[in-house]
Length: 212
Length: 212
Image (tube, rainbow over all chains, first blue to last red):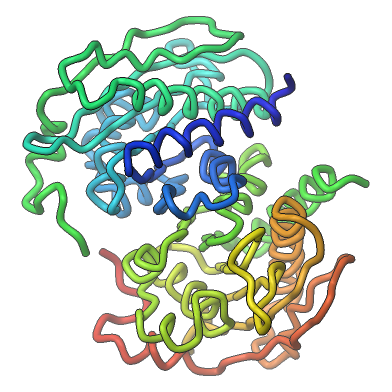
């Protein structure tokens, strides 16, 4: 199966899973630049389960659209699990969706460093909880290949991670494992879970579920 | 040249034109679902000229993220030049970009009507003006083909329209012709220009260039 066919299959599978749970999705994308949104909306009828997306390519966009604190970006870098977490929570807070995914990474060819080489991509997967703060998992992956390959693999990993998230059916105490499947994985950081919203987000004066 | 290669060429050409004018781009997408953002960010270094994007798939997202009045959607429908205009203006107002494109259409297979059949897509192209309200052109196109074909043609038309807009170099009194090129055009509505901001947007209490 080629990448386009795999993405189409995952998008359809994700849509079915969201509809089965009466849930809707919001996306917060940096390095994929809208590719996740484009992937899921290829599915006919996706308006039933895809609510909105934020393409926060600049740091200022991350701050203004998703409430990612500039101090968080300054401290951890835009490509970090801390920022991915804040992006995913911001996407939940700034939408009506119950499920959100965020992606921030270094697609290349420039922008890499020794610590964060080209291909480093951080993900956040968030879902609302009935009587609790949203639950979030984050992970970092390192993809091989050129800019196009990194972005394609990021889209696949995001879709697969969302499907995995939805398979943890309503059990907030499950492992929360959002590990993604696929090839070309260099390093892999195990996902972490937060029982509380990100402190930087929680510290904001506006309620996390407020609307404009 | 296949569609993917054409989109890549147009994205690179658009990036060069934006950089030549020291301008940045914001996108406001509905039926393309992030495809324009994904297309332009395939260009290495696009962070220099692509600022952010809004995937406003639901009507509520159009209202909340882009200040599109619900009354405007109720009156003209989400797929209308009036809404496309408001979306483009909203993208300028909610970003730091000087250039914005909006797309709202019926990609199908459902959602069509006699007046607005599947394939009907409305575009807005906006740019800031130094001492005046932003300038906007809108147009409606009707594309043939299935959902994927309509979306692909919409992305191509958006990129070409942006390139055309940037070729009107600083002459705000030029024809403002954002007619797009390509094939598979059923009907074509001539672009219109507004010397004033859209009344629904202008009537809002917040200045059109305000930031959150």
